[in-house]
Image (cartoon, rainbow over all chains, first blue to last red; front, side, top):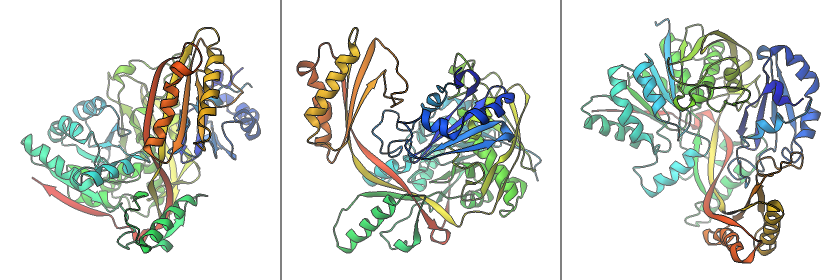
Length: 99
Length: 458
């Protein structure tokens, strides 16, 4: 099963940081996501995209996780040579993860 | 004191659609309409326009937006709050008065400025500037600029603009002056929404708990369509109806800092728990401490509840104190970017595209330090070997940083030359040259920044 099957995500950008939310369709899946989608797994899954540290915030108030990824935008939104300078599509990279 | 105010958000970025704002102004029964039109880089680009033409530098869509909206704003007694002033709120305000005059309408427009900082006039010294995060690039740029002046090198125009993110202060003064339209330069997005709440409900500006709640509402609203089904739809998992007619949101806000977010009936899109959660977390770097010039807000205590069709109730959230510094965006001339693209299709499309990419790299590597080679359809969006898809078409893209416009043009020229000097069957070449404006952020002490208001009336 991919994360895509049970959760949705939106990517945001600030400088060279990409923020990736992870929101289960069913709030009962939140605990399971907390256990399975660890920083280590995300770091490994996004290697080649995110080169810096990743911080995970747990938000039980809205049953969601937030991954704040440093050095994720090849130098930053304004000076990256990548196609998707903002990393707008990276939400769907996270959702490709198998769990 | 009012027991409820309604604020609509009719634009979430400079290039946003105009129609949803008109629907809000016409049918939304609004007290306030906010148009948020400034991204990180927008103001630096606007400043470039102002340097070329001193009466420009406000939002390029300002005339079209105001011409269509103004009759509705006046008829329905709606106050418009917008950062469409960009690099030149004063000239933006004058333009609005000119449009009102042509339409035979008498209005009061207040410009909020003071966000633009200048090292040139010695208003600011190097010791006033602090590093934001781990970046030191900005400080180096500003130091270079100062040094170049001391050395009397004219036209060292590396720095384009420095703009502080102002908070509520100027907008509140403008509201007290009973403006029909408030046009600002750089203001933190949630402050555009928080100011009318403070003004209408008499919140104290050091009641950080209420300011935090208001900031949460502003943050949910500031990207307009992003909370009403825009940037959300996925035909497989997240269905959104009538996307072509996507409605932008309005919020009914109450004196206790709670709100109900909804949209005009019969518009397209959707507002539900999923859209609200995605937007609450959008671009948040630390949900325990969300910094604006007005408050350090807490998002971890926000509660969202679906109370009806396309209706989300927002409660909770809070805040503690406000930052001692303003965040300042520094725009600078970074480099010229050259790009070229060409497509390959059918059997061996990827192999031929890769041969083309490798050939270009060999031809250009002696002249460029940083060359990006993408295979669109394969790895241009997720640049990792983890995800591999097979496609019948591949588009090669080559991009590189150059010091001059002429040098940047070489990239596209080499891609175009693949027609007769590269692999079989390449087609559809496009080439681009663009000047890239970079943005870095620094912090400046509050006492170095003075918001100003200027009143215009016809």
